[in-house]
Structure formats: C-alpha cells, structure tokens
Image (cartoon, rainbow, N blue to C red; front, top):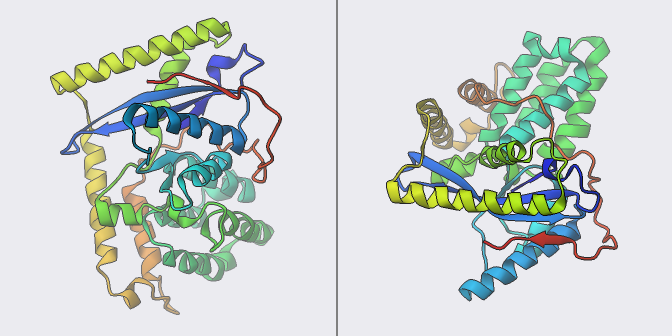
Length: 339
C-alpha cells in the first residue's frame, strides 16, 4: 500500500493517488509478480479518509463474494493515518508490517541529523548503525539490551560535543518511536523475527509497490495533465497490468527472484533460527565484559543485509502530524476504480 502524487500535479482538488497492490508469489517461492488492484483519488490524507476508502473496498468485496474481507497482512510505509484506519476498520489485532527500507531510511536520516555525516562515517558510529540495522531480525526482548548497550558502552566513547545529541537520538527518537514498550511504531510492526522464524516469510518491504509507482510516473510524463486524462491513464494502466498478469499465469512466466536475494534470505533464515534455538539465558545475557549475544547477532544480521539499498529520497510522511486524527469537512473524499 502506497501513495503517489506525480499524476496529480495539475489537480488542486485531489491530494494523492493511493494504490493498493497484491504481491503474488509462486508456490515454490522462486518467482513473483506485483499488480495493482485499486487506485483511489483522495482529497485528504486523514484517518477518516482512509477509513472511508477501506469501507468502500469492504462493501465492494462483500457484494461480489458474499463474504467479509479479511486481509492476511498490510504492508506499508510509516503513515500513521493509514495505520490507525486499518486498526479501526479491521481490528486492533490486524497484522501490520512496515517497509524495512522506509524505516531504515528514516533511522539513518535522524541519526545523521543528530551527529552529522562526518561522525556517522566513523568506525564507532558505523558500528552503531550495524547494531540498529540488525535489530530488524530480533524479538522485542532484545531491544532493552540494545538500548542499554548503546548507552553504557557506546555513549562514553562518543566525542564530548556529540554526547547530548546522541543521547537525545536514543531517547527522543529511537525509544519514543520504535524501541519503547509504548512506541508509536511498536516492534511488532517492523521486526521480522517472528515472520522469518515461524513462517520463513521475507516480504519485508514495499518495493513492489514502488515499481508500480515508477511506471505510473513514466506514464504521466511531467504530471501536469487534465483530470480526464488522469482517469484514462489509470484505467489503461490497470487493464495492461491485468493482461500482463494473466499472460504470466498462462505461460508460467513470472519474474524470477534474483539468486543473491535468495542466498541472502537463506542466510537470514539460518541466523534467525540459530538465535531462536539458543537457550533463553544465552540469548539475552548482558555480560559485564564483552558483547551481549544480541549485539553479536545484530552485527551478523547487518553483514548479511548490507546490500539493502536505502535510496536517496525520504518518504516518511513527516508533513503528517502524528496526532492528526480530527475529522475534516469533506465531501466525496475519494473516487475509486473497482477491479
């Protein structure tokens, strides 16, 4: 699930095109294909707007299949309004998984803002960055040990002029938003430890949706096109994707997964299972001397995951207030195409 704004540069009435896509994976997991199932032209991006969108989808699904829609999982970036709406419409227990690329990109941006690019590239802070990146593949119980290690072992080594900023990064950003018990983005949203350990599931990003967005941008040119043209291009885009999907199904010609990605997932699975099989006291030991087991595994995970590209653009929806839950005055919030 992701939004794009490129198609609507010339439109004052609509704020974004929100796209919901499905990632199909072959039974043996060796090939994939992602295709859009809905485009929504939205006037606003409040929780109420997304709730209306989901209710329209639910109604259309029920009318067609006579059963309630119950999605297995929602994979998206860090937009709080969407997350709140999912929990409101589909229940607080809905499986929400945040894109690791978006989350990691946000961490890196705030980390560099706190200490500066020069210090970020030093050995000390590259070590910290490896620990943070490795935390995606560990359970919640590991986060307290990671935080304690960063404060007791790393903080004393930080140059005097950067200590306060690094401490603030840990307390006001990482703990508040991701590592804390009551974090805004709880560990269950972004840790893939259980998915990998229990189900060997590696769908950790929304990259497939980004591919669809890029194709839409190419289709839209500079984006300054009329509203009827936007609707016509979206319809053509949808139909072409569905034709392509059915062609691939008939000819068993899905996109083969790259060998290096498969090898990376195999290595991550081995490490997750290795950590999971350790005795509990060994998993979460915090020795006076040497590195805790959690820290050792963070670094191992980071080495395996090192090739993951962060890209250069930020998309953390920082323009959306975390407390933006008020219901605005709106009519005909969305226009949708039903597939």
